[in-house]
Amino acid sequence: MGLFRKKQGGKLNLEKLPRHVAIIMDGNGRWAKKRGLPRSAGHATGAETFRDIAAYCKEIGVQYLTVYAFSTENWKRPPEEVAAIMTLLEKYLIEAIEKMEKEKIKIKFFGDLTALSPKLRELAAETERISEKFEGVQVNLCVNYGARDEILRAVRAYAEEYKRSGKAVNEESFSDYLYSMGLPDPDLIIRPSGEQRLSNFLLWQAAYSELYFTDVLWPDFSRKDMDMALLAYQKRDRRYGGVK
Ligand code: IPE
Ligand code: IPE
Ligand code: MG
Image (cartoon, rainbow, N blue to C red):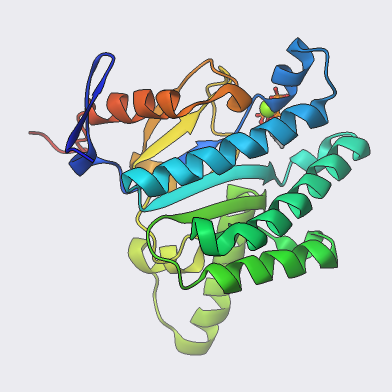
């Protein structure tokens, strides 16, 4: 693979990829509706898109990919839809475990998994355990994830620790209480489907993330769309509050 790949609107520099990309996988329902299909069909196709984009990130050398699959607020949806998503997640994890030695993608979960079925929790644990040894991309699957919930948990855990040790927390050490402990903050957050909001995703970690929005619906999101997002990222000037 060469250093540069020619892309419409410029060249993607594979040496300057974001280390950490996060994606809000949105638009499955609208994708299905447009086709007169049940929303669950959108979620099923969206899962395929996720599989392909994760493989692509591994191929080009993105180190961390964090994807929002199910939020703490998504329980508000009709029970049939929630059940369909959980069934798909089960199916996805069973397949991922089967293909693991071939795909070699490290998977971690962010979120409160205690609300999931025992079977799903077991599959999640098994996926993490088997894939731990893989190098290259690490995929963080956010399930029953909410950033406010994540921050509150961190605050509670920190308060306990403080009672014990009296150790004061700073920005860096506070990050160790989050699901994302030890990871760099996302450099780039992508949201497809035309919505321009974070919907309770990575609120702490997104402080200086570059945001990229596209109207493409997640089930239609292709490697080409990923390249476009990466290219847009490479044109950004990240200042972190400083001057150049
Ligand atoms: C994202 O797609 C998947 C989940 C939130 C689980 P949506 O289901 O939100 O799709 P739209 O936004 O209704 O099109
Ligand atoms: C955010 O999408 C959550 C996921 C993609 C998992 P939503 O569709 O739930 O967000 P809102 O309701 O449009 O803000
Ligand atoms: Mg949505």
